[in-house]
Image (cartoon, rainbow, N blue to C red; front, top):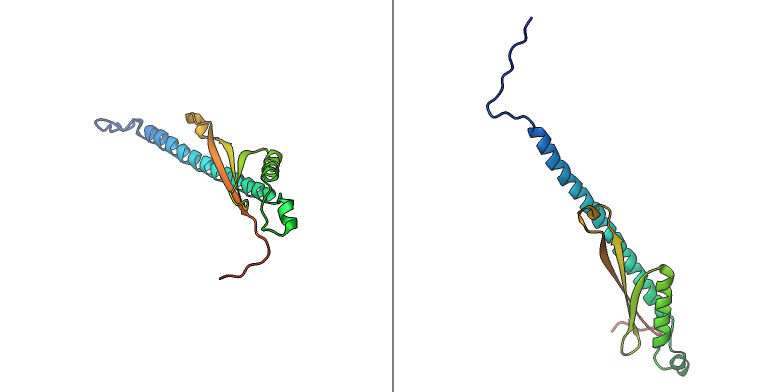
Length: 146
């Protein structure tokens, strides 16, 4: 018994699926890597924002006692606010800076961190910079909408 001869198309298709699979696999891995590292950077940014907001809140607790006792508007003690913000950032293991507004009632904290990448490290991007911002404004008493 003999088998019928196979038809071979001119030019052939040999290996066409293997090339297609290789290209699609690389593209899918790139998309998955971007999704994982992009999501990781977003989570790191949220953590930086939360740390900055809490550091600003902690700095807002350091009010100027002399002004508060005298009954004048409440404002932050510049040295105490800086120390409180830096102490909070040190406890959370982040680095950043705190600034006080000219009138002493507004505090702004900026946090700088890095997100170590998972997939982007394969193409030479080992980490991404992340920045978080937080602010607090000192209020005294109650106010009515005008």
